[in-house]
Length: 156
Figure 1 (cartoon, rainbow, N blue to C red):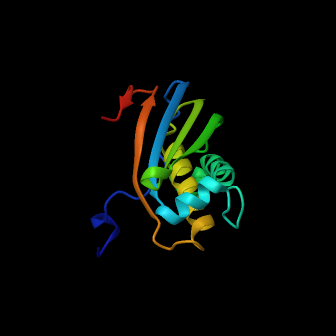
Figure 2: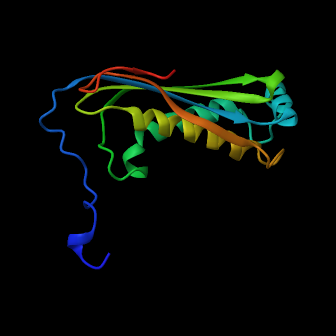
């Protein structure tokens, strides 16, 4: 772009001051394809770095609380709940990650739930990479949201 006039809108955090405070909830998830060797180590609890699921769940919760530090246009929100759960499917050599976040606020918590799920998945990768570098994180998605002007959403 040759001038400021030709540029698209400048980045800005949306003004939510006119919105009413309401209960906001969101859930997100992703799949971590870990492979047979990692799945067996997770099931046996023999990953050298320790309890992968507990550490990953806590990392996800921390990410939900720090979302505005990662995504600069997100509002800092007073979260009332953040929960992350990792479910091992040993037969299919994968881990399903689910995150749920809620607050009473003027804007939604979709990004916080997505940050929580993705960070938990990254932590699984980090802790298991000595066993396999071929771990794949996929299908990161918003599963549901409720509250706010746009109403409820449930993924199909």
